[in-house]
Image 1 (cartoon, rainbow, N blue to C red):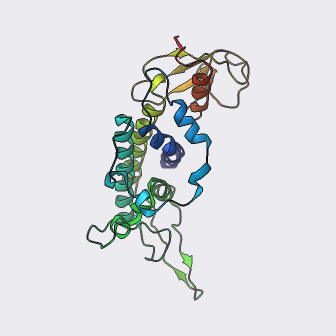
Image 2 (image 1 turned 180 degrees about the vertical axis):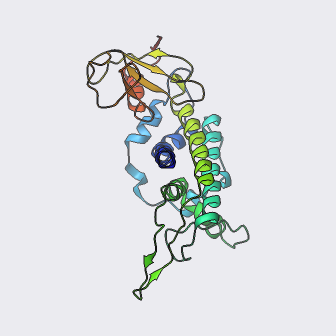
Image 3 (image 1 turned 90 degrees about the vertical axis):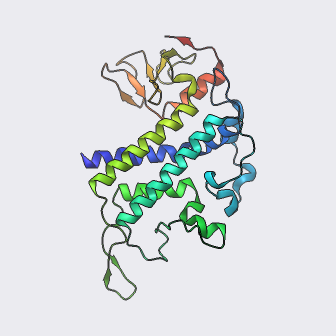
Length: 266
């Protein structure tokens, strides 16, 4: 059971990291009433361009510590700040419980130090951003680096981390689930409130696709062909092919590009 919870939580953290860029782009993009993400967001995701250079530390400062111009999408900003704060606080909690790595170990999580003279030291590991925090939490959830390690003098030293207690594993699972749901609600807002037919066919069999979601769950896309569909994805209890989140997002974006705003209630 714990193994399943750990891997499900790691998958949710991976989804959050993968969609973080899209969420930050959404902060600067007004949400359309029936289509999301908008074209400007997709353009941002499809170009690596001028942003290949490393970000300055000031640019990586936690969202909650930055000065914000007037955001175009307040819901997206609230979600980004919520997710970042939740994951940072979770990393602090897990580090306090299981971290034994030496101060110079790059795997170590550094706590904030508000009294430090510069912003980078004051933020601790939070200065490295959401991606590093999520990776750190994922490592603790999967009990990575919990065996004694060989020291420079050839002797065995203590493990950098202890295995995560069950109570903290379930806390991490709760946080990861809540954060993933918040991200999903922003990036697929047009699919959240009902069941809708998509204007594009199944990429495998050409059958009809339907997107479904509840208010507290990310969207899924189902092929209506049934068991005859050979798509490389899972099946629901009726044998139909289903794309869970985030695998469903490319299908939703494709449908929005082909026929914006033209989905019909299924």
